[in-house]
Length: 488
Image (cartoon, one colour):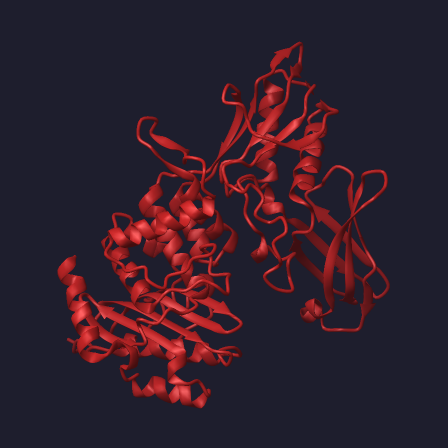
């Protein structure tokens, strides 16, 4: 390992990583789109050899390619058998169908927890003979500290209700999303909402207009959840909507305590149960016993669902799990990390510890939430390249590689690089923000030899396909490099 890094270091020292000449085909694309060469950072490695390095030691905004850092280190530190876990617990006794005490819903970074899973857990209480709960429902989010990162945090952009902007906590049900169905005729708009929530309805003051149904979002305005005097909540949609149009959309507008409160009451009522208590936040006492539980899918499946569609919430949940959960060899499972520091601080330390253990210098590296949905995160192409090299050496290399979008085939690359030599062969994580376009992963050359590939464009001119043209030109250049074997 030391020899490998020494070779790379010597190359950078001898040839000047900061200003290596870009391939002529790539320089031409950059000139066509008005992007200066200092807006691009590139590193291409073939084994120990540096094929191309341009500003590879410059910290840059990675956008969603940062998910590669989060997912690989999650596999390495938590292991492929890791699962998030949700529990229903209590210290109360069950007497003649009555749970005499609080029911505690304890979150454990269970990224799969849905309303159906909650219903199944409540059904398990029903099977145990519980028909009435005398105490309160206690929501335990203490696995992450602080437990509510979303409170008081300014929105990332103008769409705080969108799924990609959901901020994780240790106890999210249905990812706090409401699924809307919107259908209009020439005169009326019909709305429905899933899941059904106790005393929550949906309404609208949207104006029907003559417009293209495909562009319905042009008239969308931020919805709101309005609490009525009688305790009911009405979700109100605002803006305009095309006539003769049908669309589905998911929104995050309810406070998450309200969401779980209303979902729990609805499901428990549907099962014939009775509950007159409050829903409060708290912590499960150590002596509480488990009444029902749900576990998420294993980590490799979550990693795949993080990288293929570039899921910010999953990435952020995995990142915080690095700071809240640690292997418990004696129990063969996972235990809460020590208290005292914030979960972010411990997660950041876990990432840097892994990087240093793999001889990756973390100077200039900044990780804010592990998803890349950040203006603050920074990583150099060299750091990302060495991380991808470590991925090839990892015991979990097959799981890591399988999580990446395949060029021209699936995920966020489904419609990109089609008809190029990289199509069906390159595995690359995409990254896009207003001023950032990036690709990182693995690209085979014309001989089928694997190349580690990192390309990042940071520029106010990167949008409208300009940055994408540059990084895809680099992928094409790598995929065509080498000498293809002669036909037999």
